[in-house]
Structure formats: C-alpha cells, structure tokens
Length: 391
Image (cartoon, rainbow, N blue to C red; front, top):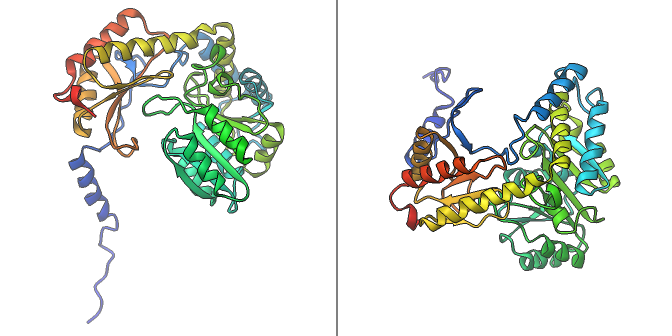
C-alpha cells in the first residue's frame, strides 16, 4: 500500500500543546502597543532618569538623524561607524572611568560580544546564578566551560576559579534586574585577583543610578579602569536611548573589534540612537543629582509598600521588586494596576530564576510626590489575596 502523503500535516502542531501549557500556568505573554500619549503612570519601563522624552535627548536624536541619516548603512567595520559613534565612545569611557569603549546595537549584543570574545573552549566562565539572559546566552555561545555560581556568593566563585587551571572569567550583573540587589563587586574582584581571572560586569542597571553622578557600580566600587576589569552597559535605560557598549582596557576593545561576532556582523547603531545617548550623557554630567533622586524614589516606594505589609526586596539601585503569591496572581495584579492607570512590570517564570513571580517597579528620578502617592495607593488597593504572605 502506498505511503500516505504528509503534505497536509501541520508541522507546527506541537506549538498548540505548548501554548496550552503556558495558558494553564499563567505564563502567556502578549504585546501591548502603547500610544505616544499614554495616560498611564509609568513604573514599568527602565527609563530610570526620565530622559527618553527629555527635550535635550530628543533633540540629540533629531539632529543626528538629520546630519547622518536614518540608518548606519552597514556594519561598523564597513560604513556603519560615523564620527558621532567615536564621540560617544570617548565620552562614555571618560564618564565611566575606563580607557576605551565600543558601541554596539544593543546591550544584549554587548554582553554576547564581551563573553564570547573573552573566552574560548579552554576558558572557565564563572557566572552568577542571577545573571541576565544575555550573559547566559553568551556563556552558551562561547563554548567555554561554564560554572554557575550561587547568587552573590564570592566564596563560591573563588572556589570555582581555584579548581580550574588556565584562563578564567568571572561574569556578573552589577545590579540584578529581578530584585534590584547589587552584586558583591569587591568580593568578586578580590576572588579574581587571587586566582588571576578577569572580571566582566554588566552595569546596565547601575549606569546613571550608582556611583558619583551616576557613573556606575564599578566606579562606586573603585574598580573602574582596573586592568583586569571589563564592563558592559546599555544605552536604553538611564540614557533613554538604544544600544549597548563594552568598556575596558584599549587592548580589550581592539580585540573585540577583531573577534566579536555581534559587532563584526551586525549593522551599526543608528545615528539617532547614538545622538540621543550622547545628549543624555551630557545632560547627566550637568545634572548629576538625578542619580540620587532615582535611588531616593526607590527607597520611598520600598518603605511605604513594606510598611503596609507587602513583601519587597530592599533596593540597591532603582528597581523595587514586590512579591506576588503566584504567576496568575501577579498577572492579574499588573492588569488591575493598568486598569487603574498605573503601568508596572510583571515578572514570571522563566524570567525569574527562583520561580517566584513579582511586580517590578521602576523608581524614576522624575516622579513627583503626588505620583509616588498614587502609585503606592494603587498597588495596595489592587493587591491580591495572599500578597502579604508571599514568600
């Protein structure tokens, strides 16, 4: 008997089953296009300093686009590097206290570039268990041996490094995006010095918030510009633009230019994004108090929410994480906040490594006292049953 044709079979039928599993677990994600004039009070974005709509930032984007065009037109090594990119790199390195910088199309691309270019099959990469997905993916792509170290535990990292002979790299977020807690950078740096390892720190959530005038977590820890230290960061959070960067010794940056695939084979950052980031950086130099304002708003949110019985992680920067009793409850809580005019983040597995769902609040430097009052009142009024008992 001739074999029945399989042309009519749905080769993606397995997606239906996977979707049903997500629905039952309360883990379905959807896109919500926001209007340009959204009426919602924003505590969900990463616009920590409130610069994404600042006139200086917008003007920087417009002037750059008018002068250099809408796109970079090619990879950085072909036609995608403009004088503006070089200007941004020099000012980023100077502001953060490093010898040199390299701008890429996103913070994700910057982490992939740094991890893969600074490791190979003979390298041990020790990665903090709380690290961002971009670092995790960088470890996978590097083909290096990877040891996932317990969260924020320098002793455990030291033991992993000591057990390896050969080149090693310790990589960590500076501020972890889920709970907003800061990494023990001094302990990690000491472990690297003792074992002759390099230290790579993703300062995406530290730039603009920590350090003198917002110069970042590494600057605050006295590690900026140290010979064995490399930083990555994003231009899309405190600087209100788009893109990423790697900062470190000049020879490290030259190495990335020649070896980092997400730099070599990717179109350069659009001039408008580079212009906006440069304008924000210069604004932060003029108004360094914005960093402290963001931290103060975070302390206020944390203090008032926990005083009312909710469970939240003490913020070390500008992220306030409030525990929810379940993924479904977190989703409903965020939806109720939205209906009440407040936009908050909702973190559920797999975005949370400990499996505990949360509301994630952004403490923006430009929030007024009335807006803070409104946010706290809305979160408390919409809190689900059991929120006070969340783990």
